[in-house]
Image 1: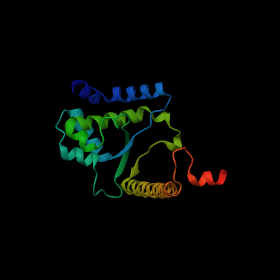
Image 2: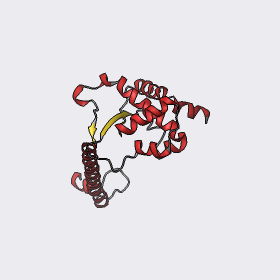
Image 3: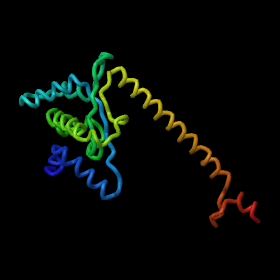
Image 4: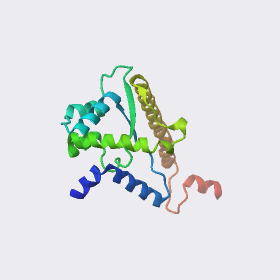
Length: 181
């Protein structure tokens, strides 16, 4: 447990370890871009700097923004490496507490800033308004639903074909045997 928590708290070590592992496998570490309200982020950052208490409510405002004004600014952070550690943000808050979670997000922003050069300029994550962010989320949700629908359609014909072409155990369906015999 101590090793696990040490790895989580050392976010830089996590991301470097994930990148090293992926480099060994020949793959590139995929960014895990997450947008947070800039105002809440800076408040958390200042409280950490001043050594003051971070409340769960403040972490919730950072990680689960609701009722944002359309003109509020959202800023990207890169949570790369944490997707293997936590399935949901709530799990992170539960295990690390508000302060540990806030520290992860501050380090994730620092990490993103240090890696800006890794992206072509036109693909680089940038700040956006809450309105733009909500539109992006809605578009992504629509794409995911469309992909799920397409996957479901692709599976149905395969199931129907499997039922139509019975196999007698020699590896060829009856329909194919009839054509070749």
